[in-house]
Every structure is written in C-alpha cells, then in structure tokens.
Amino acid sequence: MAAVTPEIVGRNFEVTPDIRALIESKLGRVEDRLFQDVSSVRVMLHVEKFRYTCEILVVAKDHDAKAVQESETSMADAINAAVDHIKHQAQKNREKIRDHHRGEPEPVPEGSGRVS
Image 1 (cartoon, helix red, strand yellow):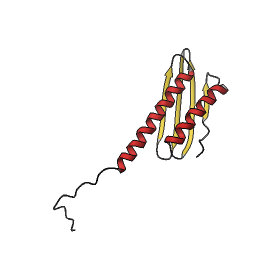
Image 2 (cartoon, one colour):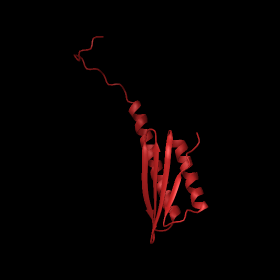
Image 3 (cartoon, one colour):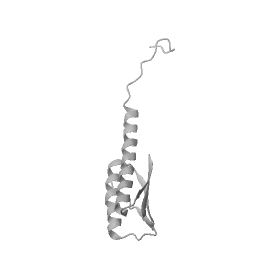
Image 4 (cartoon, helix red, strand yellow):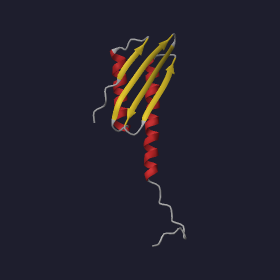
C-alpha cells in the first residue's frame, strides 16, 4: 500500500528539501505499518522566535491522529517528537481494537431466560 503524500505547510519557515524528505520518510513508515486507508496527511511547521512547532494531522478510515510538539533546539527535533507521538497514538488504537475482539465470552447466568 502506497503512502499518501503529506501536505507540508511552513509558517514563518521555509520548508527545505531535507525537511520534506525527513517528514516523508518518517511518516511513510508510520502510515504503512500502523494506519489503514489513510485519506490525508497535513503537516504544519511554525517558527516563533526560538520555538519550533510541528503539527501533524493524519486522517484515516478508522482513526484520526493529531500531534503538536515543540522544540527549542531545531525543527528536526520537533518533527521527530510529533512523529513519535502519532506513532504512539496509532499503536494504542490498534491495541484497543485488537483487545476489544479478543475478550473471552461471558458466561450466561442461569435464569436469564435463554433456553438451551
């Protein structure tokens, strides 16, 4: 399954080819492994003085994930933190779906009206 090309927007920040390649490679791996039927991916990069902010929104069939992370050192650190947060959300959602379907059947109490 091919990954969706992310829409990358920079506010007060020029999106360089290196940053674009970093985002596409990291998000591509996360999309392929953890999401099903991704319809869109938006990445917003903000810079305010010494604060770098990365906001990622992944819209998929069964689960939407949003992460906003900041860094004071570099944009790459903010991107890595946001991708890790998206990855954690997707893993948690997958485990929740799996656990929901793996529960043991509850015993039917006697006198519940069922006739065997």
